[in-house]
Length: 204
Image (cartoon, rainbow, N blue to C red; front, side, top):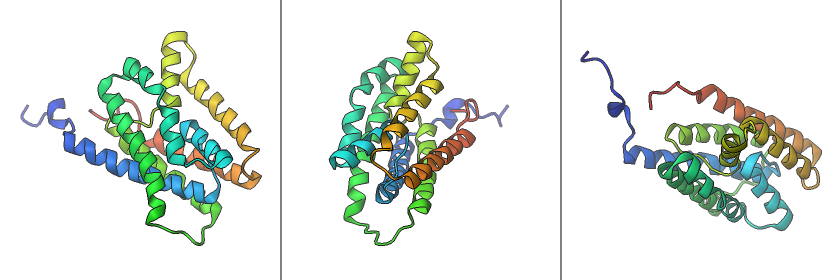
C-alpha cells in the first residue's frame, strides 16, 4: 500500500501550471509565426484569426484575442472557472507572443512547405502541454462542446464543418499550394494531439 500514488500526490502545483502555460504558449505562438511567415493557416479560431490578418492586415494576436472573447461565457458554464481562467491566460499569451516574436527574430529565408509542417508540429506539442494542465485556446472547441450538450450536435462534426468553411474561405486569400500544405499541417497537428492526449491516459 505504501507504493500506491494517490491523485493528490500527482496533482500539479500552481507553479507547474504557470510554467506549462508559458512554455506551451511559447511553442504555439512560434508555430503561428512560421505559418504566418509562410502564408499558411490552420483550423478553428486560429484559422479565423489568420483569415482576418491576411484580409485586413490586423495583427494575428489582436484578431485572435478578440475572436475568443465571446466564448469565455460558454467556457465558464461548460468547463468551470478554473479552466476558463487558464484558457484566458493561454489565449492572451499566444496573442502577445505571436506579435512579440517578430521583434526578436527575423527570418530572411524560409521554405514555406517545411515551415508550415514544422509550425504545426510545434503547435501540436504546445496544445498537448496546455491540455495536460487543463487549459486550451478556447474558441470553436468550447462552442462545439456546448452545442453537443445542449442540442446533441456532435462536437467533432461541428468542428469539421467550421474548418471546412475556413478552408473554403481561404481559397480567396492563400495560394493553392499553401492551402494544400495547410491541410497537411493541420492533419499532422491533430494526429499529434490524438496520439498524446487520450481520455483516461493520465491520472490527473
